[in-house]
Image 1: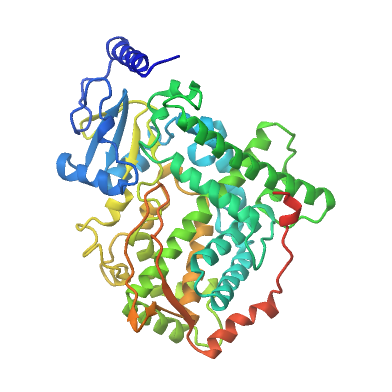
Image 2: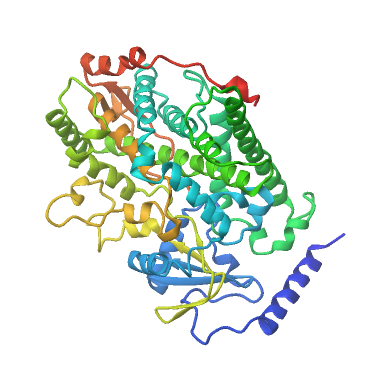
Length: 520
């Protein structure tokens, strides 16, 4: 049996051979950082489990400057705490820094084929081409406006019926939009939907998979060969569970669309659109592109939307003056006889500023998703080795007091007037060739939810025993970060506003779910 001592001796030998016999680097120094230990490098300088990793890396800025680095078992990780540096490296030099780190944990868990983790290669370009064709332009995404309109109003109806289940309603809304657009799938209207539950769990898995420094196997790849019962093999067992969920998610949804098409009853969707345009053979590269790029829609749009909208409701309860000003704009521009719609967006500058401030106040992905350098580069006098992992600290960018005055304050006015502060969407949706292809769809659904919620709901702190229940402004760790559980009081502004929402049941009668057809 392999002992821990033998394992460490083997690691030490491999590392020493790498140092002395491996490729020689350019004489330029790595970005500054904490001094490494023998063999393990900066292993102990990684964020502790459960910590706020964006804050951990921001501490590097005070100690080492706007760009810093650590090295763990020969793998270099470069942290960018300056927005201009991030734009220079990841936008202007995107030809060198648009790949993704190779993550052995992704190979083990099946996530290696998802769009967000693909290296910059032919498969990645095929995914992007397919995604852009179906939802990447204003004209392409406009064909799904009706779905967004219907599901946002259904969200409000659910809130009025059961106001204490806000987060569940947000998950149902985002799941309904993405699954209808992606597959033509209709969720359970008034109960938990098995596909939404499955995919939400898979998205939690993904959030953990891509967390920088969280998996030892990413630094010691041969650990993936260890049996699950050996020390160091626990990650393999976790990856196996992740893979089972992911396989069910992709196969069941793809097969659902194919069966619907065979019967001639399919709804317009991302997958049906691609299958109707091209011949896709089972097991082919084209099938992988369709299946996995569709799955990436949920990963890129559902959980991120829930996070952003959760932050919105928290911020409104904490900032009644902002809410009051937003309602005044809606009442003045729209009136009270109808709900805002997507065509009103250009006439609601303060509502747009509220959305911008939601993206800034707490970025959905505080550390974005790490890039990787496909070739060596000299950046600001520092060596960026080929294969280096690049971590842009988006949270640091949107809380930099040199760009945002009083960054902890939720203040939409910062984006209005003669000298607006930088638009946080420069960073919120990724960088360069890795920018989120579903950005237009996400922005539409978030804007419409924000505008309609402000139009018809009063959002306040919960009152219990005559006292306001305090809201803890704290957020989870992970690639996709959410507010920790909080309570708000949600009520219609008036009977007239409530009737505007209840009219959706007459305009859009509830449809039967496709859940039974999936067999999950």
